[in-house]
Length: 320
Image 1 (cartoon, rainbow, N blue to C red):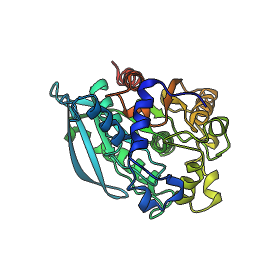
Image 2 (cartoon, one colour):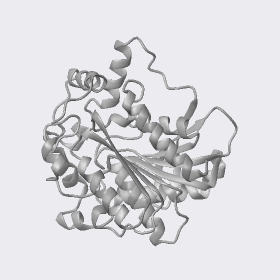
Image 3 (spheres, rainbow, N blue to C red):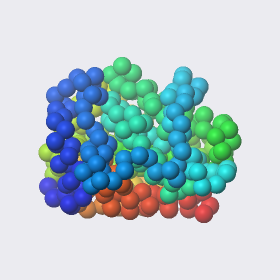
């Protein structure tokens, strides 16, 4: 397993100091109470004497939206630089469809709003085991439908809507685009999938190489799948197992990976499948960083580079 760079290590050291227990040994309710990488970033900022308040370049508001699959809590981010209308990004948080929420993943969503100069809609979708597959996937698509129908009401341009997500949320972003294609709905202008869950095999090269990595290790993968799926049959469903899906005719897709991450191979394999299906695809692995680095731009330079890469790709899809 590779060694984290100094900035990444500082976050991992702070995360370890918070005393979290191994997720795979806990119940989902217990796991949701554990310290998060976002908590560790705050500790690093405090240790550096830097402010922990959100960037004033982006305003955010929490509200509830009514969608085809029910009421969903969302956080809506809006650039404060001008009046709009802005392009829109529907952003899906990570957490293996079991833990975490839009607040834990605020860093990535807020960063994209600022750097892509876009309104970001970040929904909380239903999670397992309380709501099994395909609940999160249904909610993800419903949030996209809501954004298409309501973009103008949030200073957004309904003709310029993209999808993005991290980890399980990266899976949701791609899956939502596939569903839009299959339902002949308006297609997103682009997709950004950050260290996405692409398959359901826990024995990939990167999972074995990074079996003991933090904050995501190999043992957590079957724990997440077990709590979200109804059984082994779901592992073959192409909505979940994107490597088995028809990926043709999707919009330009950017995949961002971390070197020290069990999911690195997932992103690499998904990029290969997308390219084979004729989709314009860019994939980059950032060395010396771990799963969850993307939202750490306040303290990890490579996270800022990754956010800028994502924002540039999205802006290209929006038309500049």
